[in-house]
Length: 369
Ligand code: CP3
Image 1: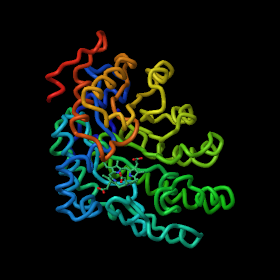
Image 2: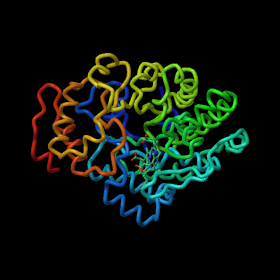
Image 3: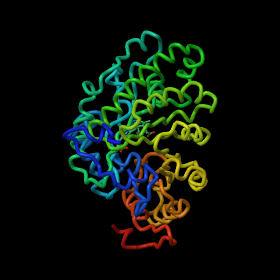
């Protein structure tokens, strides 16, 4: 089958046998591919330098030149198997008419949260090709620089997580305002979710057509919900996004703290699941190996340990998976800003040194790379 996204004229693509693409289709790879969620960020001095130059996060993310530069930084420094678009899940909300600020040390905030039917009505269903054009430019620039064996990830927030930020305004916590809307005003909730689903789907399609080889759908806050509420109120919208993007690029689905939703996530049939670090990875492989790719899932806080300890813990995780097909080594959530880059290097080195058939050998030279 010729995949439409892969045949877009003028756009470079990862090789079909890029290790992450092989792993996403549960095919055998010579060694486990590795990348990290939030691999571009404040723990890197070269990121800090660009951020200072830009004067802020949003200026950096909306400048294709700067965004492409910080996207490529971790690939250059660590030789990871993927780059991930430097952007944020909240930028589409800004394009839809919300006032987004990202304050140093505080995090993102939407100054005009969606609180009533009029607010939902005012949200614009934008065309990403027009209002998020800088994302396409960044992806094309990164893809042109990236070696064919490396994969470029695009991403978006899933509708529920987008709604949580849109309604709560900042860190959603228990998403109480959104959940009140969900239970008490289901028609308004549905209108909000329908708009977000359309924009998220179009944004992902746009990214796949602009050079993203694979996509991550982050439903960071859906783990707050019981299985019953997830199935009833959220899953159908996520399913629509997956339907809209089917066949364009392999998709990874992530839910933080979502162990109780794992079976449902698998049932949605994305090509892969990005496992939260609290999900035991060995049993997940026992159950799903061969059916779906599994990414993860070292606890991001483990990278606060010494490089030697990180190397050992990562080797232990790889031994637990035992080289079974369909594994992408990563963290169970994003890199913390307090992380020492040397620990990220040790994490990557452990993947490079690991051989499934034997116990991993601690190789001092690779720790110093
Ligand atoms: O390297 C990468 O992974 C690429 C870029 C990326 C960012 N945000 C950059 C960013 C990605 C993939 C995201 C996704 C994102 N953003 C999610 C889903 C994944 C997850 O982490 O659960 C969510 C929930 C957000 C919302 C968001 N944006 C938060 C909670 C924060 C604050 C984070 C923090 O550590 O302070 C942001 C801002 C943000 N997005 C930063 C970065 C590098 C920090 C901005 C800065 O430089 O000050």
